[in-house]
Length: 308
Image 1 (tube, rainbow, N blue to C red):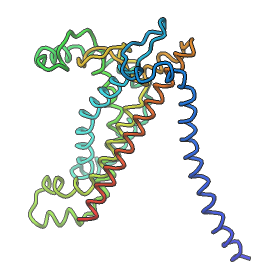
Image 2 (cartoon, rainbow, N blue to C red; image 1 turned 180 degrees about the vertical axis):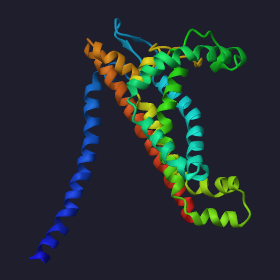
Image 3 (cartoon, one colour; image 1 turned 90 degrees about the vertical axis):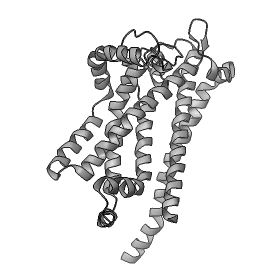
């Protein structure tokens, strides 16, 4: 009796798990199908000009995605440029340098930061960060104005750069936590062998620890990038929500997510609604492409490590 039940479980379990896996694939396919159907009117009406136009005029029913796509990429790039070194440094400190009594509390605080709702971070940014950013932006514009990204008139803190700073605060906990776990996974034998050869702690980290876990660090960065690309409320509150295409970081802008959030409730025409859904489809495609690139990079790094 027990044997028969065991054989039945062996037959049912693989099929059941296959169903669960297919459900996930079906959900993903369903998202794509629904988004494509709802975005079809805008796709047919604007074609490729939707990607190249910078005009967003609900009155004249002319819509273009270029400023929102540009703002999404720029704010995410700012967040990664600032957040990745800080996160990596914090992760190295927690695993390799910090005393045991300090690791637990600091790790807990970093993970708690990831649990703060984005609307609270956005409100903090609006009340505290935006007023504080104007003096810093003025200083950067005066001293680094020869660079296009800092050349222009500083009007206030509601701009692309502030949105990038807000995203930095939101991706640091994710990248730090995943990087910390990746560094902890490096075998102690690797460190001990390097130290036995006379290497310093820094040389051990640089030549052994970081190369060994580089695939995990890339994965952590991509997770942070995914959060930055899709963040909505916090960015909407501090970016200025202007349809501008400018290399100047201190000018107002918009992202795909902020554009959808600020316009969806007032979408009175079918073409406007369809255009917003096409923006969602573009964001979905960007996120999917980023994850595919990350998977390929991790696969190549893993293959090289196995070959060595």
